[in-house]
Image (cartoon, rainbow, N blue to C red; front, side, top):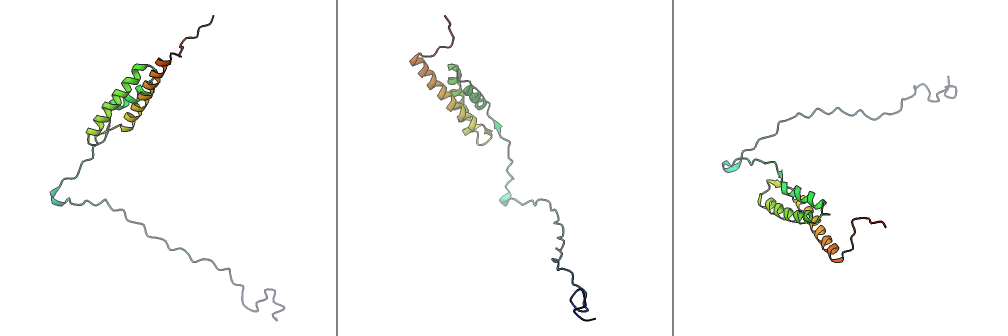
Length: 131
């Protein structure tokens, strides 16, 4: 049989399969090691991290600041916010709530300013009077 009679057109050689990428070698599993304990220099004891406790006055300041519509709530929000911010700063990281205290101070201040504006202008009518 000649080459022009061979239906594959390659002579006597069988067809070659298409090339495939080489197989990816399997990676060995990474052994799990326990965390290493390091000795503290000069005999120092490890520092115990205390969980921060949220300052209750900061929470009260925020809540009263949200309710600043009544005048006394705005004043209390400002006072509680300032006191709690002072307590948080003195706590050396054991108390949290700084953001709530600041928000209570800001909202209380806004409530006081709005209360002064309303009192000065006298343009607020809380009841609807129909005649």
